[in-house]
Length: 239
Length: 297
Image (cartoon, rainbow over all chains, first blue to last red; front, side, top):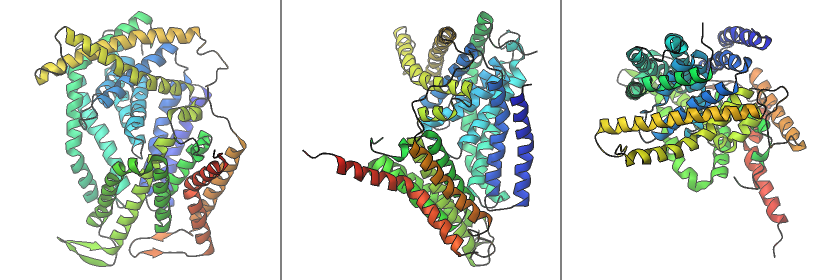
């Protein structure tokens, strides 16, 4: 582990408790919103630092950019149907095919770059983290066969199930939580449930879209990524 | 972007810090005057940058969001002494309404600052700020920006070719369309990944990853950037000190109390007003100067 990476971990692991402590010791209006924003930003730091720190090869950079661009284009291509977007499916398949670290980077950058089209706002860090985390966990859970260059194997159905849940639980809950923190002065059960219930339909539709696109794309995308890795020796297998 | 628009021609580092400062203070402080000034500044700058015709489409949506924000709090929050009435069993309090209005002003001003941010902070400016700090991620970022329009163009070509062999994306049953759409995507992905290999070989041939490489940027740090940075930094410092010593303290519950109306409060409010209106004032003044210097044949 390099010096920069260690420094990053120190900042993250000390910064998050420090932010929480500061919120308890010096309470002010909106401290929930502000502190959770700091926590989200700090939590993304080690992922980005590890991508930067290992000085990725040109080929890895371009493949990560290709997958991110596909996810962003997908989100932009379906702009007329709210929530019905293939972006999450592409992010998850990047995690499955390229490993957890690339999954996170593709996800976080998808959230960031697509907001150059849809508009940046206070929701951007949460979207970045939600997409990134979904891609990362996809890599943690499913990248085994892809890392051994066996394609998706028989993981098609589990990936679809994971993608549906990730879209609903990780993305939906994180982005809705950011809305609660943004809108409500007091975090009460009533205000939380009001926002979560009003978001339920949108999240369900988004999760359904992920399931549909994963069903159509998963085998195909992972196969192509695996083929590329075998042919050019990218992303050395994760032990 | 107008050629004579001065504020957004500042160095991107200054611009980014400005937006972080105004949005940060607007989110942190719930002082009604701070929020009112922030809203006025954000609205005037958004109008100045985009013009009335463009903002006319954005503003109604924004007003609806603000209205929801203003109503959300009193409906779900029942703290405060002054009960105005009951909604079912739940008291509606004056303090909760005040807080709701403050929330609405906060949300409105933050979103309006982001309208201007989206206009000013174009991707080349973003790369100027982060290109040397996070080179690999910035490179991915700039590639994505290039790839997206390229993929749209290629997807059109692929779809046309697929239509030629009877796999039309735009007609047929719902399932057939989805299947044909996936075929287009599959072709597109193969094409994109094959191209990525060419791109990366070309990058290597041009010395990617060698030590001492820097990110290209078209922006130079000028004297006025330093002046602006010092001015903005000083203003933020004044507001921050006022905030820490409690000069901008407002409590909403249980009663609405503005704790302080001292000299420090007015000083901080004055400085904050100057900070929020700076982009528009600088823009209007510079534009007038520019016009007066134009020769009239």
